[in-house]
Length: 295
Image 1 (cartoon, one colour):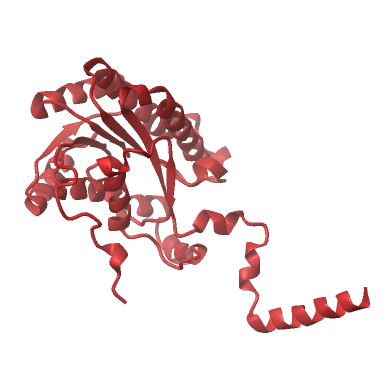
Image 2 (cartoon, rainbow, N blue to C red):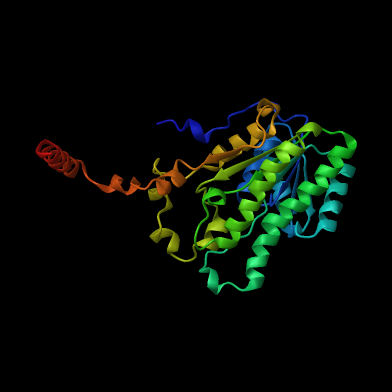
């Protein structure tokens, strides 16, 4: 079957007038989204703490797309570095009107095994980092009356919570609350705020850290997804490009889940009945009808 979902949704200049900063844009999903933005005509800034890796990625992305990429070292936990990154972006491209808060950190661990510093590291990158970027950029946009869009990458357990990733769940829930709150407060400045909650989109770096060794083979994530597959990077990039584009101009304060139904699979009280074979359903139906007749 032709996998239409793995293909680009747009193929023109839908982001031609955009200058977009992608935090954590040097690898994984951030790189996939940033690359697609470039293909649609955007000028892109990618940031992380590793400048050498960013430069190599920027060269690769420019060769693939013919677009223009500015790699900037920035620790999003530090507000002064965020301000410096913003200043350099404006100096290079003249303006900026899109921000993708994608930088993240995570640990899979029983919470009691985490040090306070490990917990803080995730909170600082995800929640404080997203706050720092959003606040710095928002002040610039409001002062200069620039129409802009912020897109935050959260997760489905931002609204359900999840054991064993408590720092991440805590931080992402905060980012989601900030998204919805500022969507209302900053709409009058023509600043839209939205979020994407991705399900499993495996990336080598992140998944190797979260599920080292043969753990990722023992835990087949696709089995938890009703569609019985994991996401492809282009699917996420398609959604991100749409939300960054002016085609989504009336979407504000929304979190869009793209997970094949995974979180709903775990949420329904009787969803485990999926495991019952059809023959057993036939037997149960006979038993239930028999019981109802007696009553």
